[in-house]
Length: 457
Image 1 (tube, rainbow, N blue to C red):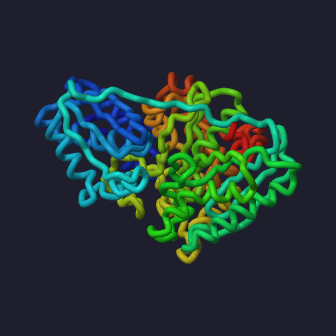
Image 2 (tube, rainbow, N blue to C red):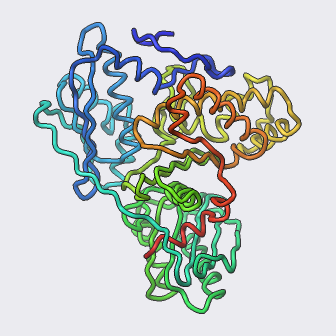
Image 3 (spheres, helix red, strand yellow):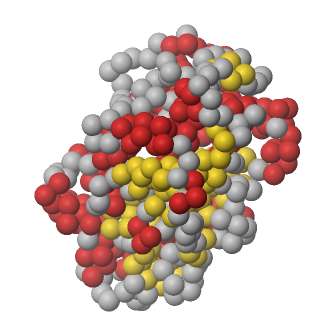
């Protein structure tokens, strides 16, 4: 197969999406013969800076392939690492094209606005000679694993909130409460729900020593800078959102509180269960949520918002309604992926159903061994295999734990089996390095809210 003059080999393309161009596979093929050095830096809060040294072809014939490679590479880094300033060092024409794209009026205006909202400074692309590329400045910090004392663990989801009272690592009380944070414009609704959960857990213990929170969103410290939980809250009430968890903790007393992205807490739960590091957690539900802890059990201070990171270069791929980009992870590793593939499988879903209800229809068919449903999960397994090839180029991964509603039941087992089979056939070395797995029993016992409870020292 060929794309932009680059021939690549993917033997096991998803049967229901044969136009899929796996970014990681194409990227490996593109690099063959690339000899012109280029450096990309992404700067985030506190002066932290990630730098990658790559090579492009630098010829007129490969100009479009060069741009596609670098633009998608920058896009992946932005949503992996996070940052408000991108340095492109060594090719001024590419830098100028990227500067136009990643502006508030360019084709990547969503990305520019999102990063501006997170870091509260305008996003910019800086054009520099190669020799002036700034030096990397990374920061890895330990996360969680502290279980002594009386702790509250809170998991803020989009449809329910879970809270646990944990004493010396053992859950003495746990509850789930349905709530609707994504439809509420008054942050008092969110605040009251959080405080109610904290107080319920506190009432089950003799005292509260610490509070840990797992929450959807992007955080600077404990402040949700961007979060789907508060999507309806007006911008002028943003300060109330940024302080919401710290204020809620004060209702319990003068106790330490640590808030972390739910993806990172999922990875932490996996690391605690497996008793090792280099763990990526990938939750396939309403969207794709990813978290990561490194070999030493540290978080890197990265966004890990891979729902918006590219996985498919097919220019006819489905558009993500929020980011307006094509080929990004949320359309491949979520209930949207199942719904997207259903027509190609010959399954007509009632359009009056919610996305979650449509997923349940396909899951029910899969439990009955319907071959049409099996074709959907088989194709998602192919997506996952080739995306492991991609993610492994940006993260050191020893265990990838796949979970969430899409991974439940027979469908999840088929996704896993297909992914493992493709890796074993096409990438045996990678298959030996990375264990793609469902959560094991010990990881399930740790759980999201217990892992959250372990966040504060």
